[in-house]
Image (cartoon, rainbow, N blue to C red; front, top):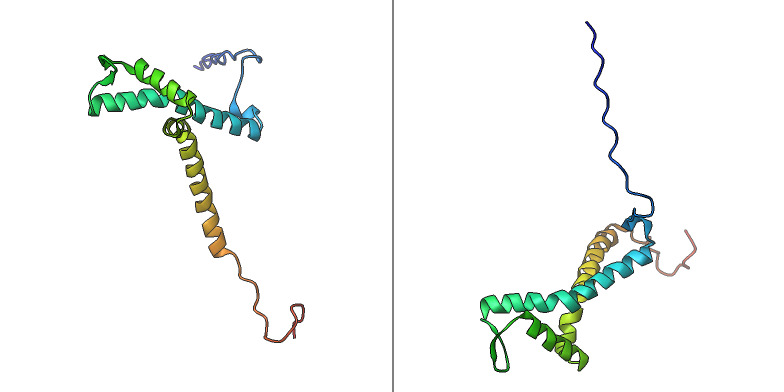
Length: 136
């Protein structure tokens, strides 16, 4: 006795076209700018909190004036003041993720280029005293 196959499940609902967004729709320049902006945002906002977390665990609580147990927001406020005053140390922290991103990308590009340079054919050698275009 033959049985009918079970009905196929309907496909999952797709979001409306105006809500669909992906990095593939962006131009390479837009993707690059988005990546660089994200690295700068991490440096400006996330790095002070990561520094506070590591320092709090390793060195002890962050002190701010008379407050012996100042929290991460006190460090963030000092960080913003340091950035506003143009301190090179604070700007190095802010631009650190961007610099690391650029260094890693440069290193990866170098790794791709070096094997191509080794395998590139060398130009033919010329006999001494002959002009560059002559074969005999």
